[in-house]
Amino acid sequence: MQNHSVPGPGGNANPHPSRPWWRGAAFLLFLSALAGCDDDPYQVKWVESPDTVLLYSLARPELNLLSAFDFVRRYPISIEDPNAAGEWDLALDTQGGRLVFLPPAAVGIQNSRAGLAPLEGMPFEEVRRAPSDTTLYVRDLPVPVELGTTYVIRTRQTSGFYGTVCVYYGKLEPLALDPQEGTLTFVFDTSPVCNSRKLFPPKS
Image (tube, rainbow, N blue to C red):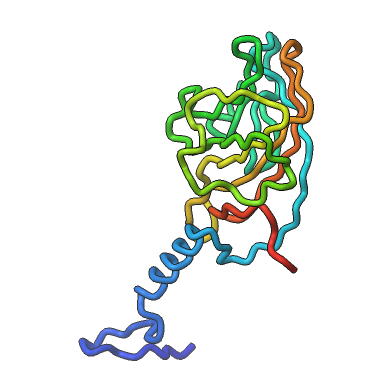
């Protein structure tokens, strides 16, 4: 196989003369910047697919109940599961006789960025964009579960395309809650686009 490398001024061949090393790095930085600007540099094609979930309060005496939810992978998990460490975005608990959401930092997982922003009186269907004001997202305190409130979710950080660091945004609305039984049913949906606050898919 022939070597088409062109010697440089010092006599050393550059194996990719038309692709300086800094171009690849600049491209990755460009993609990361786009991902942080609420755009979709990868043009992810997706459709809204709301689903319902049943969670059980951590205050119930049974072990290994599905008391937490992973909005990145869209499934409930048991916090007691050894594989669940840090791999969830909110849990359900009972405090003062009422159901509350617990972000990870509220139970001591301080390195998680997961949080939720309550939007009182906002119907699920009308919440089309996650708030840009980061102070609206509760990270380290219990959040009361209320009917008639839609909660925007910001997930924990995960790895995305080309090594980018991603959070994802979603929303949920409680449909039925029973503080005495320690159960909650809610509807949710999550955008699969890295770092995008848009909660609706692109137009086809």
